[in-house]
Image 1 (tube, rainbow, N blue to C red):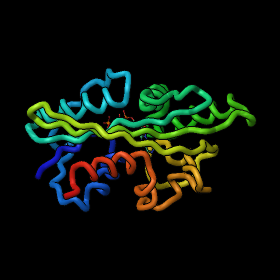
Image 2: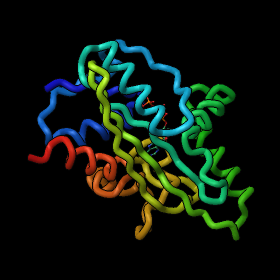
Image 3: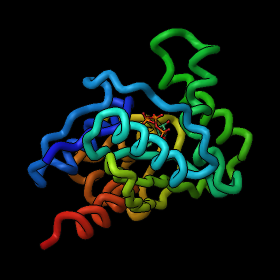
Image 4: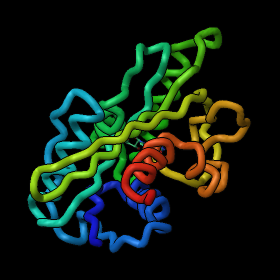
Length: 202
Ligand code: ITT
C-alpha cells in the first residue's frame, strides 16, 4: 500500500525510507505532495507526532507516518527534548544562512562549557512514530537510545545532533558509524522495531 512520510526533515526522510525499504510500501514524502507543516503545538513527542500524522492523513487521504524526536540532556532535566528543533532554529534565525547545523552545534558547545568537566554528559534521543489513517484511527510507537554528549563534533554521516552523540557502549559518534549500524541501535530504530512487529509480522 501507499504511505505518506509526514516529515519535512531530509535527514529523517532518508532514515525512515531506509528503515521501511524491506517492507515493500510505496512511500510518498509530504513535501512531494505539497502538504503543509502543521504547527507543533504539543507538549510531548506523542502529541506532536500525532498532530503531524493526522494532518497528513487527512489532507492526503492516504495513511501517514510521522516522527517526532529530540535530544534530552540528563543534567538539564531532559531539556531540550520536545523543543530540540526550536533550539536549533532560534540559532538559525540569528545566524548566517546555511550554517544552521553549525549554530545548533555552537549552542551545544556553550552548553557543555557551562556544564563544566565534572557534570555528567548523559543524554538520550527519543523518537515517537505515529501512524494515522484517513478515517481517524492511529497508533504510536516510542523509542529511545542512551548515550553521552561530546565536543567537538565528529563525523559527517547522519544528521542533526549526530556528530555530538556517542551511543552507550561505543566510542564513535552517530555521525561516524555506518548508517546501517545507526539503524540497528538508534531511537528511531527502537521505535521502528515496535512498529514493524505490530504492523508487518504475520
Ligand atoms: P518534521 O517535524 O518535519 O519531521 P523536524 O526537524 O521539525 O522535522 P522534530 O520537530 O521532531 O523534527 O525535531 C527533531 C529534532 O531532533 C531536530 O532538531 C533533529 O535534528 C533532532 N534529531 C532527531 N532525530 C535525530 C537523529 O537521529 N540524529 C540527530 N538529531 C536528531
